[in-house]
Amino acid sequence: MKISHASSIRQLKNKLFTNEIAMCANARTNRKCINGYSMSTCKSLIEKRKFIRMKKLFIFKLLLLVSVSVHCSEPKSTTSSGRMDWWRDARFGMFIHWGLYSIPAGEWKDRTDYNEWIRDKAEIPLNTYNEFVPRFNPVKFNAGEWVAMAKNAGMKYIVITTKHHDGFSLFDSKESDFDIMSTPFKRDVVKELSAACAKQGITLCFYYSIMDWHHPDYLPRRKWETNRSTDGADMGKYVLYMKSQLKELLTDYGKIGVLWFDGEWENTWTHELGKELYAYCRELQPGIIINNRVDKGRNGMAGFNKDSTFCGDFGTPEQEIPSTGLPGVDWESCITMNNHWGFNKNDHQWKTSEELIRKLIDSASKGGNFLLNVGPTPEGLFPDESIVRLKDIGDWIKENGESVYGTKAGPFAKLDLGRCTQKMLGGNTILYLHVFDWPKDGILNLPTLKNKIIKACSLSNKCKNRCPVKETKQGISINISGVVPSRFSTVIALEIKGKPILKEQITKK
Ligand code: H79
Figure 1 (tube, helix red, strand yellow):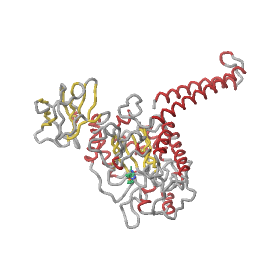
Figure 2 (figure 1 turned 90 degrees about the horizontal axis):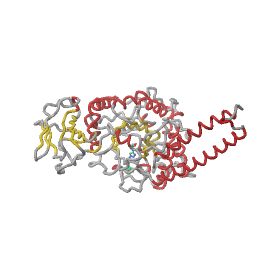
Figure 3 (figure 1 turned 120 degrees about the horizontal axis):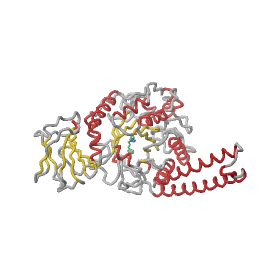
Figure 4 (figure 1 turned 90 degrees about the vertical axis):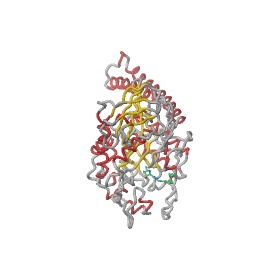
């Protein structure tokens, strides 16, 4: 898919539009037509122009369709289109799981461990689940505050659940009454988030579930849902419904960064449907990035199937960071802060700030993105535990962000000291050494590099003091005994000349 098609269309549209307005204004007000043409010549010129415009737009649209349908994934080596660039540089985003399921907060009858799957797991009949609609009134919701918390944590994009498996639309959808406008809240929270994101420079992205436990045409029903009739249910009609909703989402909310599909694994969803949906969304927003769950190319929770015939721009490991990354493809690990995506008031098993920061580093060191989840309360607030962790991550990012943003996977297979990310700067490379285990003797040991070493310093004091570096046959040793460790993870920046060339691969675990 070439981005130039889209911009050419836009340019062409603008040009014709401006000309036409000028001519029409003259014709309508019966003033003299431009360039001294008579009124009839002017009117026929307008008609002619309209025809040319339609013809050109048709050809461009056709080209666009062809190129979109041919390429339904973005190989990692592609640098020309630039479509993935912002996302590759961003490295860190916020997932938000919010909907009707936030109201029971994980509790139903005698159990307290439910989540956004509560309707299915607790086998709640549709009519009973619908009773959450008049109870959804998150009066404390403030889009600006949510976006600011993501931004201050160093996140560059937000993925919000516009519709989860329960089928509830968190946005104002003309296609469904099972949406936020039917709740007492009656505010399009997605619209408010899109305005806040635009204001604060954060890229808004949409999660959208293919599986839908509410729409009458979606098939199959849940196994336990024996009294919900399937008479007349038509998956084809459901696909049209999805497309109409996606059209709303991709036309009324500005430029969207990523479409994050999910719930694609039931056998009513096929590769052909996935391919078509990918092309459809790219047609609506040519620059959009779409995850691999639009199609069937996902390998369970590992989130990636090597077969490149499947559509999708990136793999989606869920609740895990692949041990050696996913070589040759883009990927993003999505992880919860506790053990649930949607709000669960009894889940107190929070990962520590240090664990979360190290997961971000781990993902970046393997060339992947990190999408960290928040499950807001039914009142519209982030849980306090999430707020504390976001603040800690933000503090670490303020000092060490350059070791994450715009970096690539480090060159070493495995490092005893922790992790490594890298970035080219002019003709040099900065190797960011993330020290997870502080060496007792104050010496960081690295494998030998063929490159000339320029300097080593710590980001914790803004690289004001240099760390002495020694090169021996065994490798490189950096003396960090004078460095004051950072609170969660210390970063040593090692600058070398050129691209890193390893003398030997480290094999130790
Ligand atoms: O939105 C959150 C979860 O609700 C959702 N994905 C995250 C981002 C999610 N949906 N399902 N699951 C999590 C777990 C589903 C697992 C399974 Fe399967 C579905 C097991 C068998 C079918 C997917 C497909 C994993 C293996 C095959």
